[in-house]
Image 1 (tube, rainbow, N blue to C red):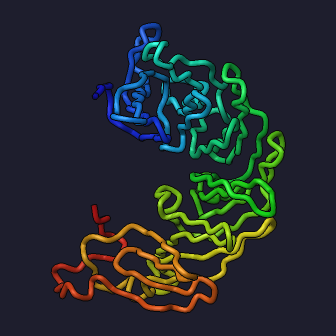
Image 2 (image 1 turned 90 degrees about the vertical axis):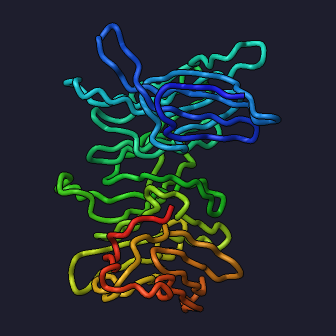
Image 3 (image 1 turned 60 degrees about the horizontal axis):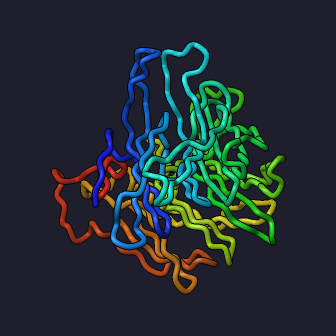
Length: 354
């Protein structure tokens, strides 16, 4: 069967037996006489032949697929609603809890409850993760409130813990070390003394979420002037629980004669430290500045097999020993193309392969 909804599909969430699509669009508010951002949700039963299951409409928009989660017959969705005309706050961030109907209850998902505004005024949601009856939300404008939301009472979801630190996380990944429940956060650091100066480097945070009412940042690592695709392309993130190693892509371009980098970094993660073990360089400084490159490139990915990490990035594929950082082999995919000068493109100006 099929179904239709207004707007365009912004994200999709799937569980073992259900799939939900989240369409971003607008609905008219007659009280304000304005069109407002809304999310139109379509649910499908995929336990057998796919068939329409449920529909709903909620205010605002989810940031990505991690903003939604199905738990105990209820769909939790975090959204940011923008209203630029408001003099008090331009955003409203909430988690909505919707009851997924059974076959006797029709097709509409009714809202069982929703939180108050999450974060401070003008902040928007940057990251969301759910674990059981808890939700973890990062909002940001100048600082990063890391919020813990109790979702155990479907009619009264509410914040039970909050931590405020500089910068923000745009991806949250739950891990466990020595029996301690933790959350890895990947994002950007922001200079506290001048928050309007912009983001100034990759920030990796390790949050202790053992006590929901008192989350703490056990440690962090800041790589100044760097950027990681893992902040937005979550498939480029890899954490190895057995060895407690984190593998992230890293890019840095400063227009200068030194310090340009494109590759990966392997980090060691412990309860109280995040340290860089070694870097995997995919292109040298001169290759980045003066090389002749094809017009498309590959997004960053990493694969681990028998203590070797194979990394795929831009125009090259490499194999590296995971423990000593020694290069096993390297393949430049552009070498066989025979590019001439008129076909050359700058390293960081090529587009992704579809």
